[in-house]
Length: 136
Image (cartoon, rainbow, N blue to C red):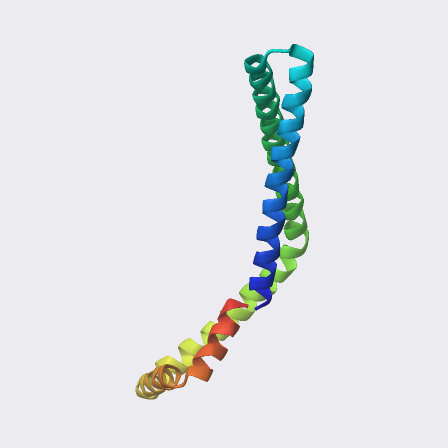
């Protein structure tokens, strides 16, 4: 529900921005019409100015996106080394334990896998719980 409200607010804001842009373009055209006194020339000048402004916005957003991505990479590199090493070691230890259990008890492992799959498939609450854990 919260996402729907936010999407609606974003849609209303986008419409407001488009309407504002249209009025600004009309004002620019009117101003250029008083300066140039030729409607086709004023329209062309207004279109050219809006086009140049759009290119400037695209360029600046690309520069900003690269800068933010670089900062995020640096932050992850600073923190990620320790976190990734811990996660890798924990995964390795759990994997070794699971491999040992499966090698020692293959039939029990197969039975547990089948029962676990049946339980997850039959119980929607358990399935939803596992999905939330895996998404996190």
